[in-house]
Length: 294
Image 1 (cartoon, one colour):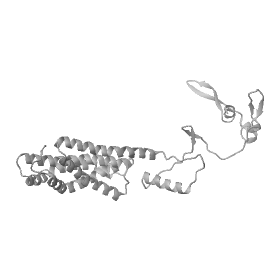
Image 2 (tube, rainbow, N blue to C red; image 1 turned 180 degrees about the horizontal axis):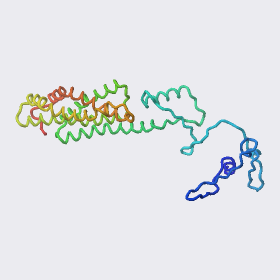
Image 3 (cartoon, rainbow, N blue to C red; image 1 turned 90 degrees about the horizontal axis):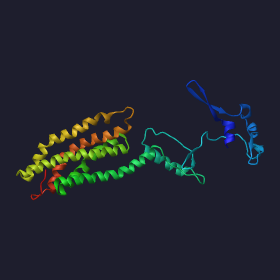
Image 4 (cartoon, one colour; image 1 turned 60 degrees about the vertical axis):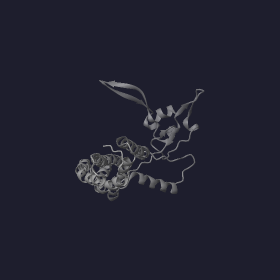
């Protein structure tokens, strides 16, 4: 193999130095001895016993179409087929291609398909997100439990966020035609964090009013009115700060735009819904003998 490779393709024999530069000196047969199958078949190959025999004595030399490079991975050959996705989401395009190939392409024995590239990174990130999302919600609940020292207020906080914040994000993705991606999933995580903060502002203030002797109904109503401005400022600062990224259409916005769009639209719906939802949820669970923490 080394002899044939050197005779036809050439091999570095030494290096030539000219001034401060070095160049490889490649040795191979002259063109007239390697430019057709007949000449290649006459290349003499040494045998273990010493004599040299022509290559044509133990190999068939012919011109065929084949790959210019042979790629290997994990000690196996593979053929890479690449394509780009435009006008639709990556996961949907790959899943559609999988269905068509499984239905129309029959692979020879010993062959198999592996879907790699960005799709592999997407599936890995999606699997990590399936673990991170419930873990994040669980940690938020534990922090709220540590704050209020009971289960009812953390429960209505998380329930209020789940019922209000994702609505805007999901509607925005649907209206813009964007698929649910890892970037938008991370956006929902950030959205939950900011939304929980607005709920804590309301519940803590109502608890403070109740500790001061304000009746339950009056405290719920006063909290909804007096904490409206701080809640709006908390949400709007985050939403307006990400608004340019949500509206951007230039190069590099494929990942940042879903993230920002989910947060901006989710915070607006969170504000609109939570104004009525949080007082209603607090009314359902609050009791005169509650242990109150602010």
